[in-house]
Length: 295
Image (tube, rainbow, N blue to C red):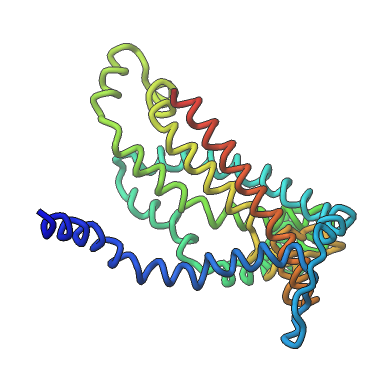
């Protein structure tokens, strides 16, 4: 009996031994750095290996509260969130409905819409930056239409952030379209046939059947796209580097500046902690909203 109990305990420990390498890797690369960053938020530390962090309590948060650039980046990030997420939730669903039709050559359209996803954001940013220049294809086309001067897409404080948003939307359409396409193909065609008998046809059948059944996918895309928009960095770094006059600078890019350009590590950790809390609150609100809609 004793040996059997001991054997049962050993068998219960076997899965944890398989998980041990992954737990160690996550601890070294994620958990420990996260705990260290949290502790540095309450300390004063610059990138100097000869000095130890000095405990300063809430001084970094007080400094953050009075940082005008930080609040500007908060506004830019929220604007990015509002400008990008609704488009990436609605337009990919329409594209998925279109490419889900049994039409000749539809696989080519699926490939065309998905191609931007496999392109590196750095490559895409460089390409779009070239298109946005005064002598780029976009401005040359506008001049052919009668515009005397090119539009300062990336050098105008009013247009820079919106121009970068367009790249994010272009890059994400195909990715979220595939998520919706998987959901659409799980809907039985018998439901649409029954709806057609009841007089629901055309786009009305999507309103009656597709949208209600796709609600979990809509919430998934809303959560993923919102988190991605909050953490946007590559586009800003490649195309504008936060300019002009901080008009396109987001929270993550500001964190990068303070950590790797100014070497103000503790202040950057404070910004990262605030960003983490903001994303956490946003995720909780989205999950609660999805639970209410599904119930």
